[in-house]
Amino acid sequence: MVLEDGYIKLHRSITKWEWYTDANTARLFIHLLLTVNHFPQKWQGIVIERGQRVTSYKELSNELRLSERSVRTAINHLKSTHELTLSTTSKYGLYTINNYEKYQEATLKLTPERHPSDTQATPDRQQSKKDKKDKKDKKESTAHFDAFWSAYPRKVGKGVAFKSFEKIKVDEALLNQMLKAISEQVKSEQWRKESGRYIPNPSTWLNQERWNDEVYFAYDDCPI
Image (cartoon, rainbow, N blue to C red; front, side, top):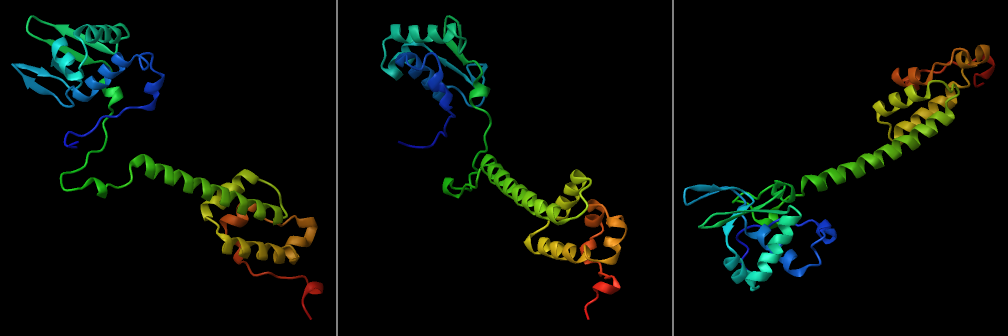
């Protein structure tokens, strides 16, 4: 088989199509998908558009090795369910596949310089990889925030704090630094006085990078 004329898109949903189990009708429809114009072309003074073809019952009969009666029946099936439109004159028949653009949405084409084996990942595949990475990052970020929230003594403004936390893009090393700072700051004079009144809101602590603050202990807590 010579692969020189490209390919068509055939969605798996065709197996649910009402004519799929009718061998002649399904075969004729797929044959027309393969043989109609995939770009406009002039023919005897008229333009045959994308998704159209000039042919006849006899020609289709010879191409598919079906009787003309079988071809006519299959075409009537396709016309009855609006898959196909047939315009006839005394000279020819113009067959139009309705919704051809829907069946054959524009796809990326290989440039002449590229070999098919050199093709890059499709946009859909790239997007799928990105979505998986984003999902993984989101899960990790949520787990890190939960650890931070559990350790931080002032539990207010959780939603705002989470947004601040996400902006910082906290990795494992920074999380450990934060948790160590919190464990020291909860013992500080400022955080302990007046029942923790001066403990900053968690979003403020994050936005101001307070994990880098120097810690001042009450006199009784200073190491001897």
